Structure formats: structure tokens, C-alpha cells
Length: 482
Ligand code: UDP
Image (cartoon, rainbow, N blue to C red):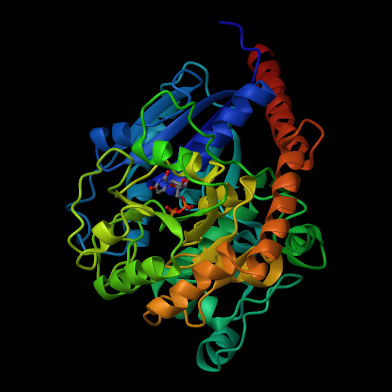
């Protein structure tokens, strides 16, 4: 077999929010940059891997290798979602190594995500290039790269005890209320683990990030500036986004899309908490009343309430398992709202919904994929952050980008009552404020299109990565021959 193009292997950590952007990255490499791609998909067992790929839009574009790992005997079932993912990513390493070793055409580069940095050692063993792909934004990348350089005593004194913002050179500071979980536990192994991720990332051949120049110019400048964050990492940063799942070419019948077809333009608010988020029972009741009182049309992806774990469904939902009843909704809610809204159990075709002309707002938990999907479709957001870096994202959307409104209190700290929810919905769907936000998000929509077009900055960034892989491949081939 004559090898003519580089082969990039992408390792996706578990959860649809991680897998979807990795698959999109694979698609771009193959269709736009003449690169062969293998995607490693980690799941709790073979059927969970299969089910994560059930709505996979590119069945023949690249090679998929599943890496099932059983962690049931290793950690408690009620361990946090982060711990579960970390352990799964550690456990998959031996099978990743064997799979690469067995490949006829060895990868030219291995690309890992934020949870996969331990696998970079495997790239070193095989003497291939190693890249990190941040499926979130440059601000999260900045904080992660900065983590190993943070003075722990200052972190505890100022950020934790005095609740002062965490200063990140050249970037927006992180408010204490928005801070990442590891910073709340400076004596926990989680903190060291996070700092070590930052350290490993700084040694990559490059860091790809799902953002673009115009969206985060200030942070990207700091990441490149040798007097700012650029001093902490030798890895060039490549903003290559927005990578978002495309809308499906709708051949299947979809009740929700048919319903949307019959609604006026920009009249529906879509309510969803990502691939695994959910609310407490009390909060769910307030949300239902708030939507009803707003008198706006809605689509709500409803999931059974959870009291102490907003990310309960993160590893179990894949778009396939959709049965659920709605006994957690207020009595009579479904009947009273049947002409204005739909509650979809567990999972909905989100990108199809957001791209529909009838959708005019998105109440979102602020996962980065959801935010990007909203931007590329020009849809204003009600920010409702739940976990991970979502509070930082919500702050960025409301205070820097100006494409969202949010509640006065954090939804993680207190119950947001029905009156405030009604008011937020009306602010983006009805009020003048909403019109202004819509204009801003439509401008961003244009900028997101431009950056991915052939002479746009994200397109050029990814072509540089592909070129780097091509040069490495040529070197490899020359060595093999000589
Ligand atoms: N998603 C979907 N249908 C749903 C819920 C989520 O298609 O009912 C997709 C959504 O379009 C996005 C991803 O799952 O691509 C969720 O990623 P995000 O980063 O927004 O949040 P996470 O799930 O990682 O918290």
C-alpha cells in the first residue's frame, strides 16, 4: 500500500459532549485537509460505544475503533462524573497502545482531549506527533495552562478564602463564583491532576481549540504572547472552530421538527441542559411554571429530576434511549400547554432544532457545544450553567459577548423562581433587549461562517496542523527508506 497522506488518530473521552466535537474534527481533517483519520471511542462497554455512534453522521468517512472499559469494580457508582471519566481514560491506555501497535499504517499524530493527556506518553513511545484538542474555549485552555504556575498559597489566601477573582495573565479573571472545581480543593489529588494536565498540554506539538480568532482575540493573544501565557507553553495554539455537528438531512419523520414547521419564525424557545444535565424536582416545577407563565412557545428536553447530581445522565444518554414519563411536571402542565409547547423525553435532535427558522431562543446549561450551535444558528441564550466550566461560559456570554441573559443568583446556588424564569424568557423572546442580543448573535453567526470558509482563520489554522502532519509523515517515510 502506497502511503500518500498523513494518518491522524483522535482519542475521544466518554460522553456525547466530548465525542461529537471530536467526530467533527475528524470530518474536517478528512474532507478539507486530505488526512486519513481513525477515531478511538471510549465507552463503558461495546454496546455503549455503539450507541454513542448511533446518530453518527459520517458512517464511511473514517475508521472507528472502540475501546470498551469496565470501571464498575474500580470506583463507586456514585463517584463524580469527572472521576469516572478520568478512570475510564486511564483504563483505556493499554488497549489504545495495542490498537496503535497493531495498525498497518501507524498514525502520524495522536490527538487527545482534555481528559486524554496521559495518552500523550503513548504517542512518545511510538515517536509520533501529539496534539491536544480542547473541545471548549480558549479561556478554559488559558486557565488550564496557567494552573501549574499558580502559587498555591495565593490561590488559597486570595481566591478561596478572600474570594478574590483568579487573575490569569492577559485574560479575563475568573470570579470565585465561577471557578473550576479543582481550585476549590487545593489539597485534593484532583487539583494536582488538573495542574498536571496543564503541564502535559504545554509539551504537545500543538493545541487545537474549538474557538476562533474573532470570538476570543484577547485570550488567544495572551496564549501567544511570550510575556503572557505564551511563556508557559511551547505548544502553538490553533483556533480551529467552530466545529459543530451538522443538521441531519431530515429524511426521518420527526414529531418535534414537524411541529416546528407549523410555528411562526423565531417564536419558540428551546430548553435543554446538554447531553446529561438535569435539575432538582423543585427547580423543574419552577421551570415548568416559568415557561407556562411566559406565554411563549417552547420545546423542552425533559429528564427525571436529580437532587444532588446535575450531571447524572452524562454517561448514559446517547440519543438512543429515550423512554421516560413526565410525572415530575406540575399537574395539568402538559394539557394546559399542549397548543404552545412540546416536552421531548431525554434527548432531542438539537442541531436540527436550533437551525429551524421557528426557534428564537435557547435556555441552555452553557456546554460549549451548545453555545457554538446557538452561535452558528444566530440564537440568543438564557444562560443556566450547571457544572464543569459552564459558569465561566455563562459569564463570557453575558458580560463579554453579549449574547445571553442570566438569572441574578446562580442556578447551582439557589432555586430560580418561576417569575424570574418568565421574565428571562420574555427578555429574549419579546423585549427590545432580546432584539439587540439577536443582532449581536447574528453578527457572530456571520463571523463563525467566515472563519471556516476557505480563506478564513480557522480553516487556515487546521490546514497548518495538517501540513505539520504531512511534513512529519514525509520524514517518517524517508527514515523508513533510508
Ligand atoms: N445534544 C443533542 N440532543 C440533546 C442533548 C444534547 O443533540 O437532547 C447534543 C448537543 O447538540 C451538543 C452535545 O449533545 O452537541 C452536548 O454538548 P455540550 O457541550 O453542549 O454539553 P455537555 O453535554 O458536554 O454538558
